[in-house]
Length: 219
Image: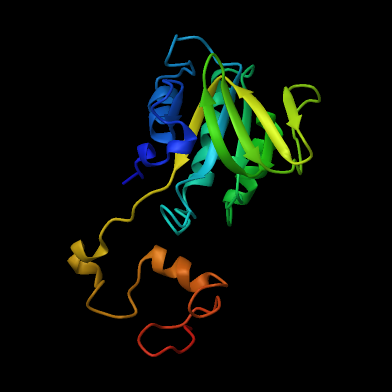
């Protein structure tokens, strides 16, 4: 189930109708439109906040694995609906492994968007939504001059945004409730979240994939 965005106070969910979750946004684009919920007008710019609650010691400590690919797909849909809407993505890392990497590159080329790595410090919702991040711009894609970006000091970036989409993390379903798949009955049947921890360099095995039953390397 999606992580409750109300727990992420610094990201402003609930302070403006124009700050929505990726699930809310999915309903919108499924109807073939991209508008601000507050007034029904088309936003000039939509910002996607990645890892909203994921990879966060205070919320979900793991990567939810599907958020990056889902955001790329939603940006592609925005482009199909209205090519005039600008897209900005603020991310910790983009994780689109395998064939999804080709899709990611394709979206970058076709949709014309800005991408920047950073941690969102806070989102303010007054007359216009402002996103404040502690980041250094590493790359801007899209047409020069397309984005109005104001730098504050040497390392802060401020974006004025029409709508915000929070790519919230997911809480895993309790695998023990699926009896026929053997979780909880066999030590070596694990969930994708457990696999994520095993594969992490800072995890219990230093990134080496081993069998939980005997600690030997999995073939």
